[in-house]
Image (cartoon, rainbow, N blue to C red; front, side):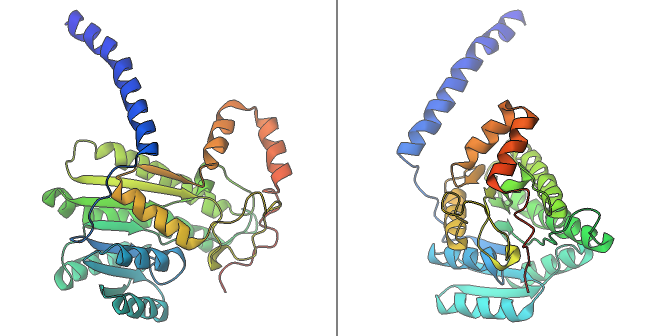
Amino acid sequence: MIWKWLGALLLFPVQMVYLVVKAAVCLVLPPKLRDLSRENVLVTGGGRGIGRHLAREFARRGVKKIILWGRTERCLKETTEEIRMMGTECHYFICDVGNREEVYRQAKAVREKVGDITILVNNAAVVHGKSLMDSDDDALLKSQHINTLGQFWTTKAFLPRMLELQNGHIVCLNSVLALSAIPGAIDYCTSKASSFAFMESLTLGLLDCPGVNATTVLPFHTSTEMFQGMRIRFPSLFPPLKPETVARRTVEAVQMNQAFLLLPWTMHVLVILKSILPQAALEEIHKFSGTYTCMNTFKGRT
């Protein structure tokens, strides 16, 4: 027994070095992208914003079918027609992911009408952009139900069949605010931090499940209607991401089976700074970058 533990202890650093070198090589020589031609993709919040761009990107990459979920039929219908014009089979269902019974009911309808979902993209989210004391209680609950609990319900609805097929992928469109919160969006930051923990736990839980994987995407501020009015102090240094860029990088991460993706790459620096700097220094960085006041002009989706 002692020799067994000693051998494992000696092998562990060798494994770590191998994995780090392998990751470095993949940055220079990216692995072959996964073929998506047999995949059925479901995108929540798929009618507009990043969700619409994700549908377009998956269609360009040749997926078999795309299913859109959302709460606004007009947007869902427009996106569905656009995807069909691109030559990809597309369907939409009205579904509020914050409503557990509705998620389970519509998941059953999707399986009966379209077939098994092999790639689930949890993209639906809301933000109210207010401080805690200015927030309505119902609005706070809505954020947690859609941004966090909605992922519990959708994943529970579709993951079991993925495990049976040994073919599936759970994707979460999160936010860098899950790792570094800002004032004025306490509902959003809290829900995204919870969502990140959910995905981190799920990703580890799938390690022994062949053919089923997970990807969490954490983008910087993205120029969509949802965060309309948000202002960055130095937009030239930290320009907002384009939704089509986030969509493209997300689909690539799925094809490369990448577990976590920070966008842009400079966000890695933020994570490192949060790990080593004292709180007082972090506060000064927030003041200098303008994150303390960036939500003062927030308008949100009209």
